[in-house]
Length: 278
Image 1: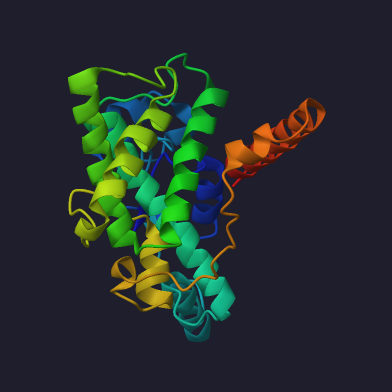
Image 2: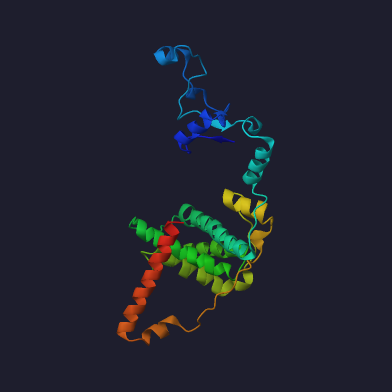
């Protein structure tokens, strides 16, 4: 295990000074000054290769923990490192399960949406519009997770994007030209699901993608459930008002319509802000 330039160098060097970190043998030779370079700097007159190095190039690894901590401390460190003794309530487990499953499915959707089929979250390169579009599909994923296991939601997303591509190739972007996420949701995901609900199958987590470290630790070490991806998340169902929204909306006065739209806008902005600060 080693740290490189992705970690704050000042913190790394502080740990080295405390003998918690050492120079990793996996460091590149270009990270060290040659004897010729060392001789050119008087402050290193008594040093030789490889004792002088560039802090931003060299890699650091943990010292043997027994040299740093007592045996008791090392045992504590190992427990912390591998997360084996943490306790969660059932509600906390279910909430975290839902949140991590949503993040993993969004990552899989994002690859197919952007990289494989070259859709865009925002054609105008607006960060705010892009974040709103991402929140739109995340909400769709979360709603699907109330009804289906993550493996089945992955199937719906995968087939939905493919159907949107087929529609685009055959008819073009007939609607939602400036909102390609909504296009994929409407003409892909919802359209495919409407006619293929009996054909939803369990898709394996793709071997070409890698789960985040947080998800791996939670599902493998804490939940200890290798089948989590194929199980319906045990979360409370949210009561849904079945009345058609447009019918309800059109029945309101103009004043109440504007007030409702304002409230919905505030809720949307709050949800987006929460996502951005997550």
